[in-house]
Amino acid sequence: MSTHLYHLELEWTGNTGVGTTAYTSYERGYNISIPGKPVLQGSSDPIFRGDPTRYNPEDLLVISLSSCHMLWYLHLCAVNDVVVEEYKDFAEGKMELDDTGNGRFTEVVLKPQVKIKNPEKTTMAMTLHHEAHKACFIAKSVNFPVLHQPSILV
Image (cartoon, rainbow, N blue to C red):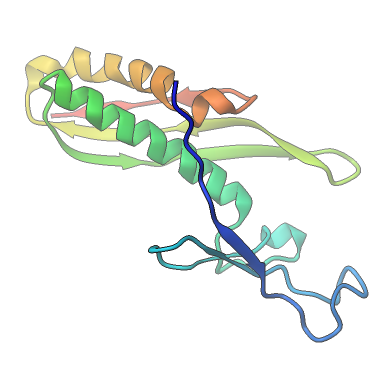
């Protein structure tokens, strides 16, 4: 077994000059820095007074699930002689808030559209979505369902 560590620096950039003197006195902006990578600008979801032009934690969770699935899927296709020519995912995350404003994700649905070169591998291409889900590190780490509605184009 091996252990992998992921380091980043998160810096709040939303101090408007008065800090957090009130819920409405500060912005929700932050920057995420990882050495050797571009800075990622984040905020909270607009429903929580965030900047709609920045990525929010909820976006990043859905992005993580979608991209992890895609990377495993492409790997599995490569080793099973399924030639992928295009891959697009139209993922959706569902979060529910309770009466106190606390929330949790209840599901994420991945909707990958995959174009393959070899029509005789269509069944295999569909099956590999299930295998990619079982292998995805991120999907195995969440406590809600990650569903798949793939389509295969030839």
